[in-house]
Image (cartoon, rainbow over all chains, first blue to last red; front, side, top):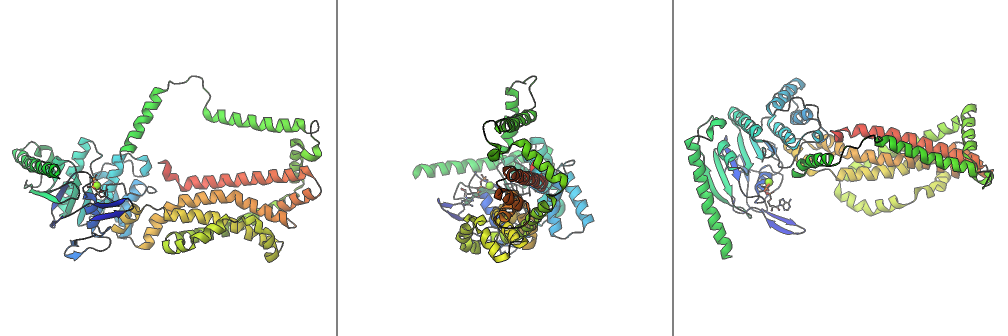
Length: 253
Length: 275
Ligand SMILES: Nc1ncnc2c1ncn2[C@@H]1O[C@H](COP(=O)(O)OP(=O)(O)OP(=O)(O)O)[C@@H](O)[C@H]1O
Ligand SMILES: [Mg+2]
């Protein structure tokens, strides 16, 4: 993927070749500015790759991919709608009956811990609260695939753990496919079936690690288990090697 | 993200840094007191100078103008004229802004057509529409029609231009987000483009209201046999300074009142900005 702008061109992605299997939870790890959000935008069909090919369920993606729920990195909830109205929006668009809409909205507001803020506009919410509205909005219509771009970055450690657990439980229940962008290695390992590590720009995939921890996972205890530490060491080792080799590459240039 | 997070912190720091002032007047009261002082000083010195330094024939005086206004309303002689002016204003504003909103939204979402028309729009926008008033009289007669056309034209451009800007200003992030949720064009219009541009439409209306009042009055000044503008023109023809100034003051009051109404409407339409 290459961006052509007035100030020159940026090669965001090159040689990114991977498959997201149905029902799989994949975490995308990579340095800032390497093209993770770009990749998500392409999967969602909002931008087309300048070269290469993307397919969803075997069909080339052209135009917005309405099978997915996408929580973008930047807040995309509508500022003129309250928390409840924002979460209700995808259900309205899908013409669900009012009663069902109300029930679902209430369930998801509860899930993201925003009870009492149903009628608040985004301008009256904190950054982390707005993120949670966005998450609820992406989850509420239970799409078969979810793209989440750093959904928990703005949350405190305890809330983050709670949201991670809620997300995992829901995904396990729905059997949904998830592509999850994060900068946090522990978050990637605790949540995902597979961690995909990208290099700096122009990004390529430098490693794919099967996490292989059993499900359902108990997030509070997971981090203290031997298996977890084992996976973590493997990821670190691979990353360390990669950092070394890229440093050498840079030195050679 | 990061700036929204640091903002409250710095506000806290500021309020901690500034010591709590004691026995200090509430700022709103201070502002109002200041404004009363300005008005008092202005009207007082005018009243004092009139008859002492300046011939009241040229300057009239606040008390004479006040008396004239009271007289108009006591006898009720001003009502028919005021109503005519208000009718010209409201019909003209309504027609102009409805058309302005429709055209603004349409062109705002048709970038190519908008680009073709852009220079022409700028030219017409920059034309002094009031200067066309005599032509409108020629085309639409000296009655109601010519004033409504003038007011509608003035309001149209102000509302159109703002709506147009607003419709182009919609953040594509919101539109994309709705497209992924499966929204069609109509839904995107209803849920995103219109609410997003509403802020701009309201701004256009707020600017248009006083201009529309001026349009109606100037239209009447140029040629008519009714309306507040006609009263002003009539007084002017007889060198009745008090009558002219009383008419102008009346127009200003009406304009301010109408603007306040629009501001209330605007606050309501953009209440989401206050959280
Ligand atoms: N619309 C655009 N036009 C031009 N260049 C862009 C555009 N969007 C992104 N880029 C460039 O593409 C590169 C990748 O951006 P992207 O947003 O995908 O990074 P990211 O991996 O999501 O980073 P972060 O972790 O900081 O969110 C960046 O260098 C950025 O400058
Ligand atoms: Mg990003």
